[in-house]
Image (cartoon, rainbow, N blue to C red):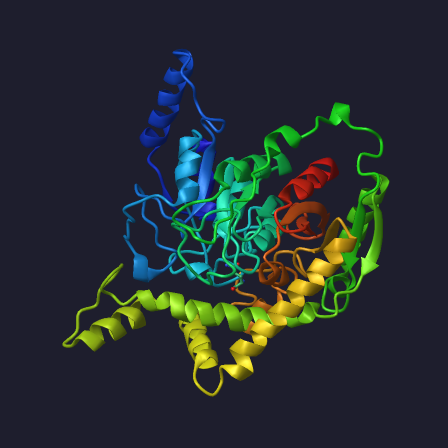
Length: 456
Ligand code: GLN
């Protein structure tokens, strides 16, 4: 893995920081010694994991892809990272992202542009594009990302890997750099459903440092993964699948639609019954998401005042310390989100924007709950297109935002969703992967993982 990482990194730029080989190898040797001495090692002993750079690590920089946090080293590990390390995993480095998680291509990083391993002229998706590219190119075995509006699922789809967005509250957010706190969740990348599930099991659970983390029981996902030999001919008999009609209409590439339809017939072959379900509020998710996410981020990012964290730009007065540190530290997309959020929250506009978006959120939550009372899982594409060219949407934020239509509703509803590859379309040297999204009921990641494992 280390060899491959070093060899491929100049083309991919998926990492913002890579741990020195000696540090990684020392941890692996220590584990080997323990095993030789019959000492217990954790279930992830020796697993090389990439960690998105908005997740805190005490021994590596954590920049969130921003110049404002250049050289910032948190004094502690995020709970998810602590748990991984306690399970024996080895953090190999910190992966690239759009600044503070705001973006869908990873071009919004203040440091570098990550390439899609399937076609180096295309984006890996975002904002967790570094993690997705790293797992896709086998630079590490699994990776952590964060998903506020699709940032695990859309890059998983673009890079042809498995991406899992857990239920809101399933994984502690302690040590995750906050973007929009009511939507943020740490998620998992793997090259198989089993890998993603085993990673989720290791990082899940209640945490006293995150009051929104849940006390719901953690399933033993690892023991769910049936071996192919043990599978009956119709292992998914009796399961009801609802295909969301609004996600297979205009604005979605026809090749993406046909890959999703093939995936649905594969599920039917495995015993599911599939039918179309209409969620009329589906298209309201995008405007509601961008208002709520911007509002929450404008509030969350007020902590970067040049005093408490990161880069300081000294001026003559305190106000210029704040102003200059922020003006020079934040990139343009982040500034735009702060302005949009501050505007939508300001007196006179609050009712028209923030409050209405919250009302839409309630409607969306309810429509998903109703549909999931009737169906075991809901299905949609993970994105309306496959990976597009670097630069193609860079100066057209609305076009980029529109690409999040398939994923944002799931965050508004707080539900778990699993993305896995379901086909290829023509493009690039070897074809471009298409991803398919399965959405489940709250805290029922187990069902998604089971179906996903059988599907793949
Ligand atoms: N692309 C979306 C945004 O820019 C989602 C990002 C995310 O999930 N972090 O807000």
